[in-house]
Image 1 (cartoon, each protein chain N blue to C red):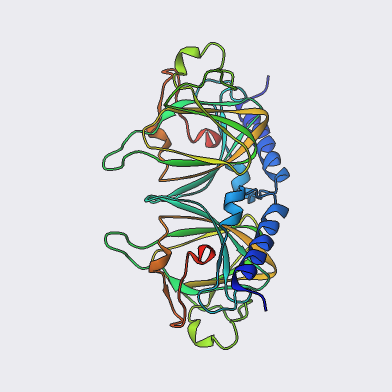
Image 2: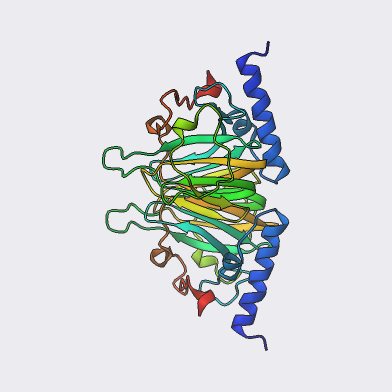
Length: 183
Length: 183
């Protein structure tokens, strides 16, 4: 049986390859530090997200997000923390297709597939389809989730400071383990 | 003789082509809004910068910077404004080579060429060479300037809020005209 570390390395390599195919170059250190977020659900390829953190200061943050085909980042929001109104983030699609769901008028027939068995934990259905060159800014403290199309997707995230440990997920089974790679 | 508007459009098209060649896709609106910054020196291809602003909120900013071969962005700093300590920015090289100069121990033999006739207005020479995948964060209120290598360069800029009109240039002849494209 494949060990957890080995599985993480395989997914890291797959992520680095998708980025390289689109001309996005990482340093060896960044490649080794790609986060494979499985949100504690242990089904990373279905519900998960691959993350390269370029910079995260006390003023701003920039990441590259990679989604495998039909992979879903589960519903969550970035709540206020102290004097901070909560993380504000802009998703810019670089490659592939991503369907983003936010609070607001539900879209009648959404294009994503809610992960089977987790239907109770997906509650916002206002769809924003992002193709390469298109972007959307999510206000602080707003519930959102997203899923890639059949090819997968690469999304640049520009945001205020990222404090992943404070994210609030709709699914109570979720544990956010931002340092999984370094376990 | 070529009109100013016509020249701007030609440089916008050249910029969009360089981005497209590296797989960086813009919307038609973004292409039309590419800023050709000539800093009032009227020699944009030598001293200038091409800018795509993806997002600029009161919390963060993200841009794509394009430099033509050996083009120079002249020395400047981002001063404090009210309670803001000044813009902090991270330059990530995506393609080509960029030589960045900041305050600190001067590098003995720098690789850039200071624009002839403007030597008096370049005063910091601590060199940071950035190749694709490499990045550097410039603290607020720190003098800096940068020049592309012989191929040109594409640089992603992640930063705190951008307020270009407040930038302080070492060269007193410089006027920053951020909305030149829309004149």
